[in-house]
Length: 476
Image 1 (spheres, helix red, strand yellow):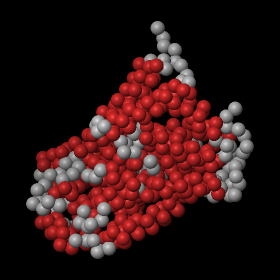
Image 2 (cartoon, rainbow, N blue to C red):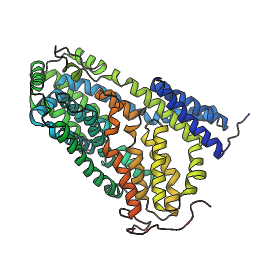
Image 3 (tube, rainbow, N blue to C red):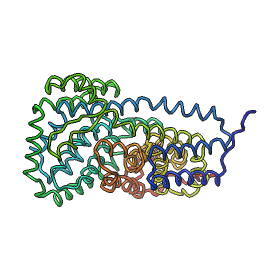
């Protein structure tokens, strides 16, 4: 007998929504493994879908599609694990740390971590790659100082996601402009109005933190010990930094991400064998299990013993479960019902519209375990009509999607991005309060809607100083 699909009522949608959030929050607070918590959240979502008359065949098809769509990302994550292990063996990350300690003053380390991570991410189009390369080097240098590691990681993450948001090579940048039907560079130009002022203030804050907590905090003897240890166990040369530069070059030449990452892994492996004399079998073990060395210096070993495919397995589990949960939730239509029957009824002007879109992106991201692509797609589908009816250009919509949808990913404690940062940089979630850039951007997004600066009507005309573009009611 064919199941009849039912439209969720507002009460059912709200109850289901809160139930899934409650399951995630309670389980994670109880200390249940994040992958298992999200899996159980997905089970609840499947139960909701079945209750709405969605057949198991449809649910299974949804799950298959989302896993198939996510496969390229799975491969990239695995290759990042390989790359970190091989970069340790080749001396690339040790060289970045060694020369960084020679050149970088503790007072500028924090703002520099923000700037360099941002530049790396803009060139590569990947926040994950920036964290695993420049971020790893910055944290390694920070470990020789008294500067708070969570503060440095907050600066790294802020910079990495700035680049992810602004880079024309980034998947989220292309996704937000694509689903909103906005030309890519119009979308990037619109984001300048919220990103640039937030970045300038973030640099000032990070610089102040660096001067306050970094002045005189470099332990010269400890720094010298680390540098001499690195020199003792690796053949140091500036040429070892070339694999890191290669990551930038493959992006400049717009090489496909998987192909570019694979090429970088191969060349880095050659560097490890040629310059460090690493055997092929040992190198393959480092690629899978992570780099392993006993230097006899307690502070150095944790810096170097990282990476490998195995270090990414928990992340892959979380990513897979989060993708499944997000896809099933979207298929039920409960988010659309909540938006249409609850949220849109309160939208009377552009300020409330932008604010509601931001909040909605945050909520979807927290519910979908930091699935920024899910957040962008669902929010765009929900609010595109509202922006059109109010006469606001869609490049404001696409910008708002990124201001919250993209940037909130690394501040979801149980999210894929957060777990990735924690895995690669060997930190806990205490870095989240220091992601100042990420918290500043939505503030400027709201300020733009209040002042009209950085706002355009559907004809592309500036809305400076106008309260709203159209009085057309959003809900009939």
